[in-house]
Image (cartoon, rainbow, N blue to C red):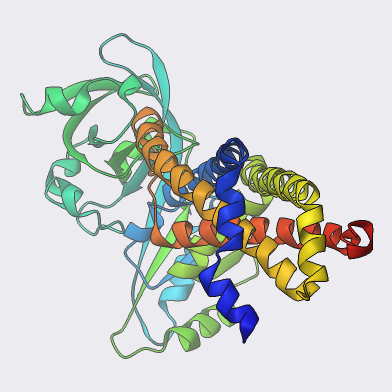
Amino acid sequence: MNLKKLFRRTPLAWLQVRRERTRLLVAALGIAFADILIFFQLGLMAAVFDAATAIHANLNGDLFLINALSDNMLTIRTFPRTRLFQAGGIEGVESVNSIYTSVARWRNPDNGTAWQVQIYCFDPANPSLLIPDANIHLNKLKMLNAGIYDRSARPSLGEVASKLAKTNYLTAQVNNFQIQVVGVFTLGASFSADGNLLVSDSTFLRLFPDRSSEQIDIGTILLKPNANIQQVQTAIRDRLPDDVLVLTKQELINREKNYWGENAPIGIIFGFGTIVGFLVGTIIVYQILYTDVSDHLPEYATLKAMGYGDRYLMGVVLQEAIILSFFGFIPGFVISFGLYGLIAQATFLPVAMTIDRFALVLFLTLGMCGGSGAIAMGKLQSADPADIF
């Protein structure tokens, strides 16, 4: 009971941390740097995932067919349209549809420079993509050589959206063909393309003359209102050969995320960067706490001689670690929040702070500081009152 009263009345950990202000500043800056590094890596990794799966969220369907050899949307492989017709005959299927996609060469209409855009193609009369601000322009896609442009594409593609606002259409060159941009929509750039373009199936086959209408990239399947999605999915898998995968929308999204997170170099680099940031913070806090314990070893020995046990003294060190974690986390979070805005403006990637990431980095910060404190506690074992008296 006396220890608890002393602990409440005498905030020993806070007094020790506050006493060495230079050491406190160095620790706070070190932890803040580690947190910024972790926030930066996690933010960019999440932006990669969000950008890579932005189109998936707009797919119009309950189940989807893709080539079993496809790793991701950038390197997606085609499969025969007959697979889609086979799936359409399964009980519970309402309708089937298809999407073509490929990367095209876009020329900036202002200066003629070439950039990559991702082309998505479907039948405008029966759209397999439902993008709200693109729907109002679908009738215009029925014209040959018409396209709807992604207004959130990188500025390097040209001032297309602003010019289109002043006229009915804009001429641009894609894969050495002239197309008319008849509207805009919002999707966003990614690591694989600087922007996106929606076209009709007839326009797509003109832009890519080596493609066949019988070879599609994604098959979309709409189910009847009362159909059980798992049962229909199993039935389609049993009916179709193993050269195609039958996935729900969430499974399709997870497959894309897994590729970028586990197989692509980008995901590995960001994951490694997060680990490095955690280790840097751990080492910095350990050095600060170890030095603090070493400098106050006589005082700790005196407390032992007065009857305070190792448990109490270790609690003091752990409290110091927690105090340092908050002193470092707060500026780290504020700076990272500002950096997210700058990165989003510079890269046009969906980099944004989330509550989940805030909580995760706070947890990691407490973990790195608590772990460092636990390691530094070993020094307390050498605080022997016999060395003082």
